[in-house]
Length: 152
Image 1 (tube, rainbow, N blue to C red):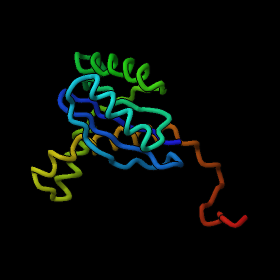
Image 2: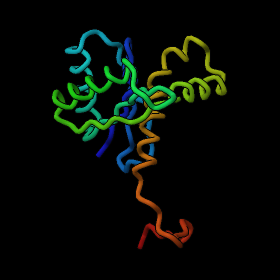
Image 3: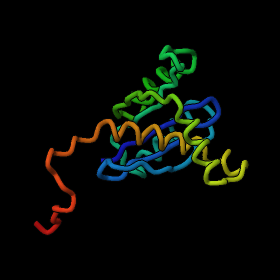
């Protein structure tokens, strides 16, 4: 079961996907927004291709935690997305995800043109990884990974 992470913007939708175990998030693509119908059709295609069973959509809150027009638009999109694709859609606080993505790309010395191409999908990856980390089962106390025997 895989989960999509989406960074929903006015011009693009960044897309990331989890691995099958729900441990890590990887970038997938950036969907150039055209119309709601075209956007949903492309996301539906990607959901089928990656066998996605849940979607985490970034909720752009203000730094003080309040919601502005972009958060309202994301909530509306989450409702339409869930109804259209028949999948659960969970909103996740995305504050600073784009800032973290920009910092990562700058530290990696990625060119300005390439940054523009991948920033939204990297932000989606940060959103999804945050959600995955928060929903991971806690490790048992006393568990030592070095004691793990995959053959047992």
